[in-house]
Structures are given as structure tokens and as C-alpha cells.
Length: 504
Ligand SMILES: Cc1cc2nc3c(=O)[nH]c(=O)nc-3n(C[C@H](O)[C@H](O)[C@H](O)COP(=O)(O)OP(=O)(O)OC[C@H]3O[C@@H](n4cnc5c(N)ncnc54)[C@H](O)[C@@H]3O)c2cc1C
Ligand code: FES
Image: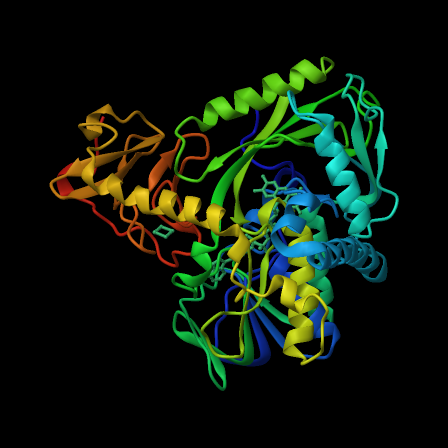
């Protein structure tokens, strides 16, 4: 049986840290210890600012733990599509900033001596089944106009199977994300930064100073950065400009040397993405809108079938894991001042499938904004931008979101909790309420109100991940209702009834 965890969690310990135990003041308080938060804290502490980092889980325990660790300046939504929406200059800045992000990781790894398996390697954009070579031609032209150096068309990628024509992107990167974040955390501490885990930021207030409430304690700061992947301090503005998608990964053993060490993605929608880590072939894809598909176990089987067809030497699947990415309507992350908020509150979100480079860009850009320095990327990533030309995409996603509220009118997944097997969940209707019921492996029932604490959509059971996923703006909860992804900042409310405490 494959282990249901990321290969990164299985091969590196998460950095140690304890909870906050007093009120504190810092120049900057960063909420979120993933790549966006720690990169921001790193640059600020290097610039001599005092920093407090808060994470409510273990450090690096969010979506950075679930990544596949491709570091690329290829845009997963394509340069030619970005050009259509935002023009040639935007395309150039996007190419510059993603290239700079890979360079920055390369430099930090060397400067701080971080042992995180970082390497430079080629990346290949492959044609998905049924797609036409013209897609590659358009992307090649656009990549050149964007100023990317060395991108070229090749007759095939260096895999054993005949991939057909592909684009080669030179000097991409890959690393072990958790080892990299452990190195960043150490470097922050060396500069005097203070990092706290198991410290949930309940509430953020702008003004002078900014306030972050963490249980009994308060952190005061000149500036606050909310790097929680999906902002937990922004009720609506940003959440209507991006949409949550689940994506799945398998890691399968292959004989040494049988698969070249390159990165690859195809032009499908959803697309497949590939890399090697030691003797593991890592294959991702099968994305779907969060909370809107009930067949995640099948998606792992689809990934395996896709990979076995192309890599017949593949042995057992050793790992499987899934996570969520936020897809901005106009393809690029939102990094900067939180819209309609005090000037000293900043956010980073809209990671897309490029959250590692976007998170690294956030580190550089937010540091500049907080220090009052000019940065040529500011406008491109501004969270306040109105993606006018993406209106059709926005309308489609917003209609989809609105349609989710009709879940209040339907019945439950099952008529009775008796039909829920062990280690599984289902929605049950009880009068006017919908209840999210999980039966744990011992048979104990855990009952929570199914209304998402963000804006009230009905959460859905994800059988592959054993999570409750909200179909509206990306909130996710573990099987017993604890929040694991914003924008909700609280757990699902308990709906426990004494007579339902234990069942067969
Ligand atoms: C399967 C998968 C594959 C991917 N592959 C790639 C890839 O190859 N290349 C790429 O560039 N990107 C990839 N991505 C995207 C990328 O990994 C993520 O976008 C990125 O790691 C997110 O980093 P982050 O810092 O924004 O968020 P996170 O890593 O999620 O960090 C946010 C942190 O905030 C904390 N937090 C949340 N709320 C609170 C609160 N109220 N108080 C305190 N702390 C809080 C969480 O505990 C968490 O640790 C992938 C994503 C997935 C899911
Ligand atoms: S995430 Fe907005 S309602 Fe659930």
C-alpha cells in the first residue's frame, strides 16, 4: 500500500518550534510559515528588521509540504494567454520575476549553505494527447517576446516514450521543499527572528501598530504580512478573484537511471507534471475544483495508469498525496497591500501551480514594499488590480461559486449515519441543518455543522484526502472539522448529539 503522505514529509523532519507564550513586539509580524511567509521573514531579517513568524501548525506544514518542488519560469497558464489578458509588458515582468525567483533560491541555498537537493535542470513543455503543435509554436513565440533566454523547440523530450515535439526551458530548478524551509528558518533565527508554531492568529487589526491576536497573546508590529496561502483576514475581495482547485500526486519507484532527471508538464487542462527525486518518479495532475468531485481515489488510479503507459519500467507506487492551489482569474499571484485595509497589512495569495516561485517573489516584493523601496513587480502582482479582461473567466467562477449555495436545498449524501463506513464521511440532513459526519476507524462519530465558517457554503467530503472541502473559496477542514486551509479561520462548529456519540 502506498503511504498517504508527501515524499517530503517522509524524508525530512519539520523544523522544531514551540508556541508563543507572551505578548511581543516586532517590526514585522508574518503569519504563515510556508514558502511565502518564511521567504518574506528571511529578506526582512536580512535587512535588519525584527520579525515574528506565527504558524498555527508545525512550521512548513501547509501546502508547501504537498508541493512537487518544480521551480520554473514557464507559466502554467501559458505566456501567450497572459499576453492576451495583460499585454506584452506584463509578460516580460512575469518572466523576469519567475526567473529571479529561481535565481534567488539558488543564491540563498549557496549563501546559507542549505542542503536541500537543489539542482538546475531542463524543463519540457509536452503536448497533451490530442493537442496541436501550434500550441507550442505560440508559446515559443510568446516566451521569446517575454525575454526568456534559450527556450527552444525540440523534436522530443528525453523520455523513453515518444513525447512528440516539446519546448525546452533551460536552467529551471528543483529542490526538497521542507529541507529548504528548514534552512530558511535557521537563517531567520540566526538574524534574530522569532518563529512560533501551534500559534493560531485569530484576528488581525491594521493601524499603528498592527495587532495580531493569538489566543491570550498579542503581537504588535509596524507591518503585518498574512501569508496563510489563502488570506484569513480578507472576507471577500480577493476570494472572488481566484478559485480553489485540488491537485493529486503519486511517487513511484523506478530502476536507477531509467528516467532522466528533467522536469516536464503537458499542455492538458488539467495538466500532468513530472519530476524525479532519487529513485522516485513523481507524477501530478487530475485537478478539479475543490469540493466539487467525489472521486479522488479514482484520480490517483488515473495518474498511475497515465504514468504506467509512458513509463513501463515503473515499479510500486510508494507515495500518494493531494493538496490545493488557488487559481487567479488572470493567472498571476496577488502580492502586496491587502485591498481596502490599512496600509500596513500585506497579503500573498493566488499561488496557482507556481506557488514556490510566487512565494519567493512574495518574499522579495513584500520586503521592498515594507521597507519603502521601489520594485518593478509591484503593479503586476497588485492584489487591488481588477482583472477586466478576465471578466468571462471571473463570471464563470463566480457563477460556479453562487451555484454552490443550492447545496442547502438538497438532501444529504446518505439518509442515515448508519450508512457511513469507518474512516469515512458524509453529509446528513437533519431538519434544516446539514451535518458533516465522520466515522473514525474505531467507529466513533464526529459531527460538525456542514456550513463553512467563511460564508456558509456546504462543505463536501473528499474521500481520497479524508478532508471536508468547501466548494466556494477554498476552506478545507480535517475529518474532525479542524480548519487546515483559509479563508475560514475557525473550525467547523460542533453538532455533536449525545445519542450519536458512538455507532457501529
Ligand atoms: C500537489 C501540489 C503540487 C504543487 N507543485 C508545485 C510545483 O511544482 N511548483 C510550484 O511552484 N508550486 C507548486 N505547488 C504550489 C505550491 O506548493 C504552493 O502554492 C506553495 O507551497 C504555498 O506556499 P504558501 O507559503 O503560500 O502556503 P503554505 O505552505 O500553505 O503556508 C501557509 C501557512 O500558514 C499557516 N496558517 C494558516 N492560517 C493560519 C493562522 N490563522 N494562523 C497562523 N498560521 C496560519 C498554515 O499552517 C501554513 O503553514 C503545488 C501545490 C500542490 C498542492
Ligand atoms: S470558503 Fe467561502 S464559504 Fe467556504
